Amino acid sequence: MTKTIAILPGDGIGPEIIAEAIKVLEILKKSFGLKVQLEQGLIGGAAIDATGHPLPAETLKLAKESDAVLLGSVGGPKWEPLNIAIRPEKGLLGLRSELKLFANLRPALLFPELVNASTLKPEIVEGLDILIVRELTGGIYFGQPRGIRILDNGERQSFNTLVYRESEIERIARVAFESAEKRQKRLCSVDKANVLEATEFWREIVTQVGKDYPNVQLSHMYVDNAAMQLVRAPKQFDVMVTTNMFGDILSDLASQLTGSIGMLPSASLDANNKGMYEPIHGSAPDIAGQNIANPLATILSLAMLLRYSLNQLELATTIENAVSQVLRDGLRTPDIQEEGQKAVTTQEMGDAVVTALQQA
Ligand code: IPM
Ligand code: MG
Image 1 (cartoon, protein in one colour):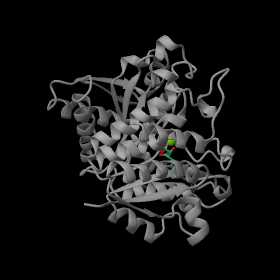
Image 2: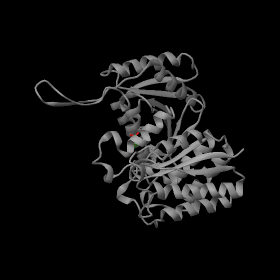
Image 3: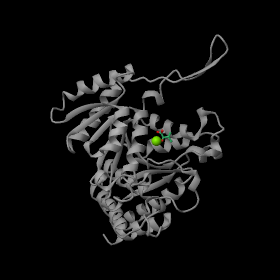
Image 4: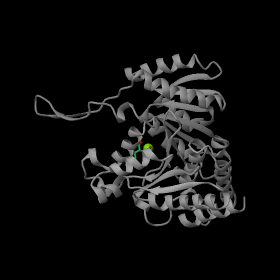
């Protein structure tokens, strides 16, 4: 049966990196018998420019009706002066929320070829394979009330709210425990339970859910310590589970362990494994339009899409192997370039993955 993938390129480098993922999809259709139909939609700043809204109703409908969504990135300086309620980021957050994509899987995997691209010593990162499970539709990102109010003395005060319902913590904890069961069976839950009641509660619920997963070794860590441990001795971690905001921060940090944020894919899943797939990096306006962005995080996101939402496990592995192959062949975009290596363009990197796939 033909599946539909909604393609939302977005802003900045989004369209360039998505173009390379589309090349990969086309070759999968042509040579590997994949039956998919691609439908393009507007999101973020591109959608604001065209329709005045970062998440047009049409895009939301397309995303809801599709089997999976592949997204580039949103945002950029052009839209920063806009009110926060209608900025490009709201398009992305709206999609996550409307599609109920509460489970964000962010693997930080070091390809052996990139061991020297990391700013950390090779022995610290060699063999690194961490999965960050980030809660994606709750916490301070969505908590109400939020905004700016005027105090009695006329001074302005800004506020956001960190809230978690028990069921929200429980369902993300289950995703994390189940992921850990398929890996090294170690789960570290990250919170700030020494200061924030909402995350003390988080710790309580995760511990309670853990009783259903006796095979998984559960530990807890404060987020400040977790940040330090991630750069000190990252290989101590297998799966990490944490709140929306802590997950945002720690996943950027973890990406640097693997050499570049340009390498990290992500999957955002609902309760039925329907999902949206996107690189964890942003729209990188500073390098947009220059054909130098690394398309591999997006291509690896496509591999996750095939694995989780289309159940095409073999094709997912085939893409990941093709990425390994081009890295072994020495192809490097500037973000993962080492001394003495020649940098390739975004398009050359995408073409190389396609060639590796054709030879697979
Ligand atoms: C991410 C991004 C987003 C987030 C932004 C673009 C809204 O940083 O996916 O990590 O904060 O979740
Ligand atoms: Mg982020």
